Length: 305
Image 1 (cartoon, helix red, strand yellow):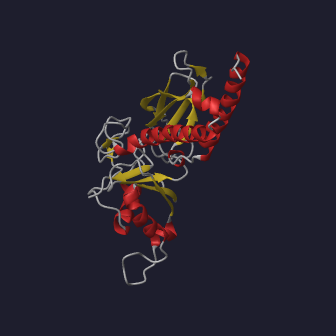
Image 2: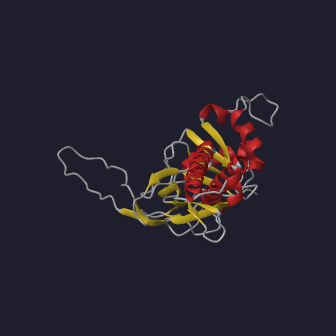
Image 3: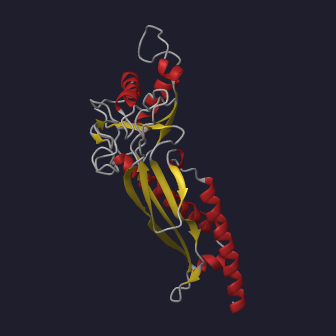
């Protein structure tokens, strides 16, 4: 029987619905790692200008009847989150459409959405992968640095004084240094953070799990209590797109840190179209998003030994 225009239109409509259903299903079923780490925000502009504040110094004593001292919350650093557009289109051949090859369509949808997820994971990992070498912090140095210049004067650091591989001892030192050496812009020490994320590459996942989950201190024979476990609630998050096998990071577990992602356009499945030359059915997807660090405090890292 000859294929009429109405037959092709119905064929396309049915296939489009099937494709979009499969794409949506695959997108929802994939669990992104980066969402466990980043503060997620929406944007309605081409870019987002973010200005932090310095806070104020210590409140002074006040004598009875005396005038109040005054202080001003000053602007800190300003960074711009410029959203990047991502887009890709895949084709379903006319033959596959005619033969109702839903197995082919399902494979297309699966790998298409997987590709989008991989791009998000890779982009979200860049601030960490470049965190020791690139000037990607608002104050003009790397995010994890020994000489962050404070607006209130002086410097602070959010990395180990001597880079070290992940161990019980180095993690303990990082937790101490976080409180002693990492400071707010006005100069105060950071308050203790009990809920933390230990962000690691695959090579360190098992070491990290042993350190934070063992009841006794791992690697010693004295039956000492694992005080890291008793004093902190640390969740290990592994990301295969962290490229340095020795680097590891600590982040405030309640996301009170400066790693942000802005979504300007969420994952969108654009209207399908037909290629006039091949008669292939074309399915485009796109999204616009950005990832950045707006302030380095409440994060700590080391590149490893």
